[in-house]
Amino acid sequence: MKILGIGVDIVDNSRIDRSLKNNSFIKRVFSKSEILSAEKTKDKKSYYSKRFAAKEAFSKSIGTGFRNNLNFKDISIVNNKLGKPSFVITEKIKKIIKKHFKTSSFNFFLSISDENKYSIAYVILQKSKK
Image (cartoon, rainbow, N blue to C red; front, side):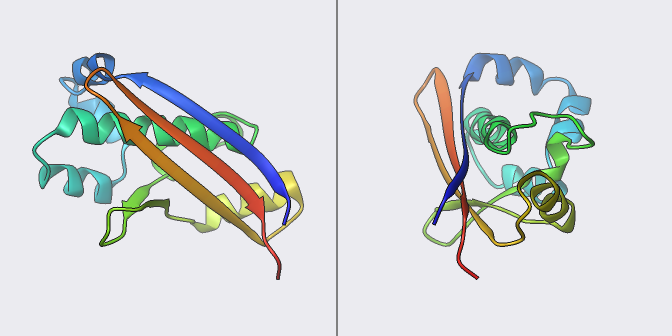
């Protein structure tokens, strides 16, 4: 299997914390499901910082950044029961990957971590066997 792209991003958590005071920031960057999940967590700064870093790393892994009609809200992160994060792959994302990489068979791998001051995310986009 071939690696199509990688992306990494680090976020200063205090920057995101300041942005959270602006409700339009939350609505512009995060999906409805992410906002609902954030309501259930005690550390919203960490929750949102990690997801912001993951979205930035995602955009870098596909090599486009946030252009060509890709927006923050198009990228949504969920966690399984054990806490492992992954991306929700929408039809829009499938179309972007197909156009940019000429494949409809792919996987994303996401790792997120944080400390008091920083959050980091690492993404690998891999072509998968079909």
